[in-house]
Image (tube, rainbow, N blue to C red; front, side):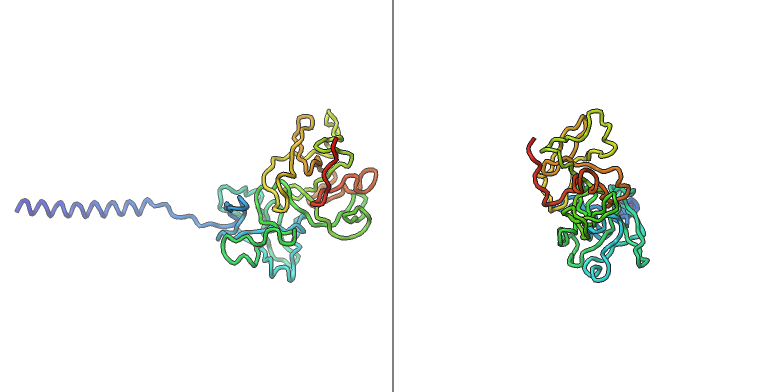
Length: 282
């Protein structure tokens, strides 16, 4: 009887222990946080990219360099806008760069570093990045572009409109900006990897500041072998095809390109494009 009784107690004890263990395990499980807003994801080809909360990729439009959404009408059927009232729950994303604009039709659209964000309708499944490079003006959204493409009208400091040939006229030019849409220029007298403008005391660096940036991501139509760094009196200035890159201090807003009319003639301080020739040897 004692043995049988003890066995019953042991059996009941095991059941109780298992029940308590199961309860503790269930109670200690961390709830999975719901993802909201813009997320970061690592893509095998593109590296770190921006997605929505479900992992669907987002895009930048070069024509939106000024921060205004220019994909309207039929364009939206291919490139639907992205909007979330939640900035992001991703702890690795710089939330200070997340914003919202109100479009001309009153709808809201989320932005990152001032760029309105879009989907690509032909990305049918999560993870697809079919929209990158489309038309040379659509690029997968990334958090760390060192250079970006703008597709905009050139308007000089003198208020005149210029074509890509620096003659008066209308029409968009595709040129380079930094990752936040600020226009980059070359100085036409410069040589390959040789800044001939900036003074040793940096006294004129406030007018045409050198572009200092660590090389991170580039739009897919620009290859890293075209990018370099040159030392300018202790500053590391980025170069493209050997041309040292500068800002213009009168470009007060993103997308402005007033520097194209400054100097001996329009284009003395040219913007950089895919067709820019290699800088001449020193």
